[in-house]
Image (cartoon, rainbow, N blue to C red; front, side, top):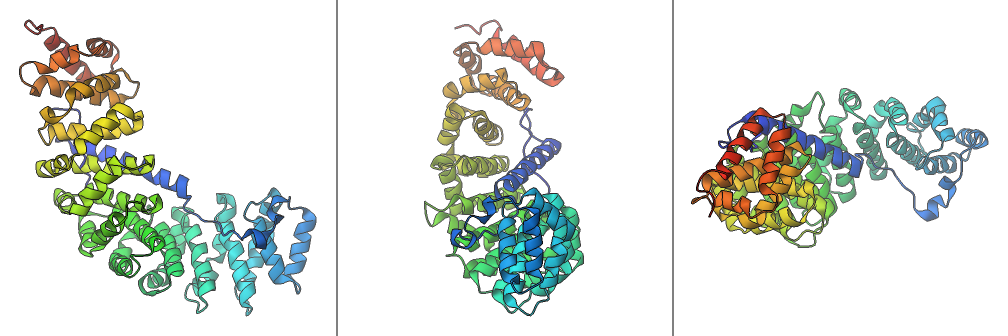
Length: 481
């Protein structure tokens, strides 16, 4: 998808290379954050009554012998249950057992005629697939057997098999391509498309969102199989079930993150975005777990073409959600995601910038610049610079309050913040009438010192040239009142 962040560091924002770099960097960070927070994998925990406190004890060689014996005799279900509990927090002995022979033994139960044995074996494989890479890889041997169970008539077994597949899909590109080669995609999409069961839909979307992660070799097939249309239909059916809405949104997050412009248009044509916006704005206390994938999906679309961005901004609920998420949220994650979306919107057309300004966004951006930590300050600064450049509204900003903060940017060790600080001060000097820019800088203790210090240490020739011109302008004859 062609990225569209504006070039923030020059008077005329036309360079697409800088937009590409920033969009790519932001997506990588958000992908990493999602994997750190949500892990991409999910352990299958038993209730305290079921597991008692078994998993707190060390698994010993004698336990291995006992479980192997139990798996081969008449206490197979209880042995499988005990093993699945141990796999929640596996000891070294458990890891060795799984790598040596555990997976092979478990695969043998997938063809069992006993539903309980099959289910408990799947539970074990699910937790193995959720483990560290060295352990999870061993569960790939079960993929051909899992495939047959993805269409099981037993909903509990089907759900558990899909869960295991979802964990394996999070293991990486090689695992995803192996799952695809074994034919996992068709039955998985079929479940997402046709199930009327909330639990099954959530698990299937979890697995499908992991299958949609890049890199993979089959991304376009998801569109050939009408996945966006299926998501939109199920979203309408389950719009009051926030668990389903959340998982459906994660599928859309991964689809929009890697889509080209035409594919984004396909997703938008399904009506799913309108439904997501309705879900996100119908209540002020919607869970952050649901808001994050919805806002991230909107951000991916806002980073598309101007027409796609304008399509979002034209929807009142989009503007309402974005303003509310920045204005009232108690979650830093939501605020940061929303600021990322806003930086794309304000990098679009002047009309879209005006829409956001008229919604009162400047006040909140200024508050963030003045009071929040530097990571959020940086996100807010992108939008303020866009409002000044694209919207040509530098005079509408609360510049007297902002100048000290952007001077701090110039003094920082963060190259990006330094460049934004210089850009903002240059805009003040160039666009405010009657030498208001130099006078605003004069009112900040250490303001000109920050520019002079930076010109002495910067390795950026372009920045040095701008700084030198600003310093000359500051000391120009007639600048003193």
